[in-house]
Image (cartoon, rainbow, N blue to C red):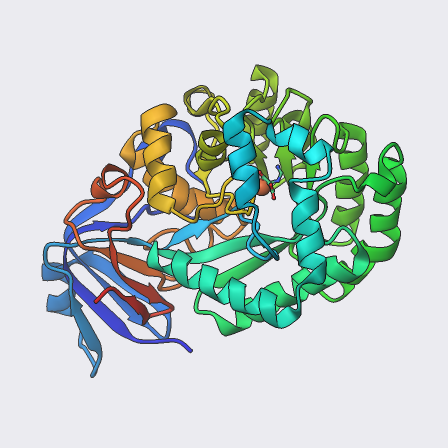
Length: 417
Ligand code: NIG
Ligand code: FE
């Protein structure tokens, strides 16, 4: 359902204007209009400008008007990397990590992702739906209007498909747009240890064709990592997915430097994600290939790992996006403002760069920069109104949502009372 709406007198209209990713130094430019107005008609942005110039010239029908005096207005946030749909939780694993066990050690001994696989296989669709709706409600309260959601807690045909079907149903039922990604190659089950190639064969033969045929996912992703899937295996799966019409994403160089970043460039992936240990050459290669570098500082924080080298990436003309990586293990948080604060405090991003990274560049990481991620005429009317007059309050109010209202396709879908 699309809406008509006028938002006027915005202290700052933070347009983040553009129809493709902003790279390098261009990430600092937010194209702010002071005392701004946006007019949304039938869910799409029709006019953008100063309140004086636009409201003076437009003839206005009987349309709802929001007065944003003293408030900053931004594009709805795009959380471009999450593992939204899963059964069970892993609170005990958090305690083990506090004791000193590493994330990869826990996974090697059958915990970690594999314990979420057990719980997700056991969960009913209704349970997954109910949990998914609650999580999306929380994301909406942080200003998220589009979220990516990966499968990867099934690791068999039946459960991977179940996760993707639930994701599709969440997209239909919730105000947030949910973009599905097939991550069947998320971990290696004990049965397949040493036979990872056979697992990739199984995905290619028994799961991918159905995912593509039924359009259950738009992207294919893989955990390209030492002791998980190699660069060669990743290339084989992602190439096959591309021939079936699925665009590529890669969990690349998260724990060690393996070459997933270079592979993302070679494959023309839409994004390369994590990149904590990406090499200089890999970073230069994704910049040249126009692959979005999706950084997930909540995960580095939660795992006590070093942060990705965002400054080096931006200096080398990368387009950087920020996302939560919301999942039950390595980062159980949907807080966009926390991610932005961590990026500012520990990765050297300016507040302006952090805003670009969760708006236009988040949209580019989902291949949607032509439709969402900025306040431009013709784009979808997805907006957030802050309780403060400046975007600078988002990372400054660490981890806490400053979002007062969320607009989706011209309709108010969240109101903080
Ligand atoms: O992006 N690295 C692999 N996958 C997720 C974690 C998933 C989990 O621990 O359940 C990540 O960090
Ligand atoms: Fe992830």
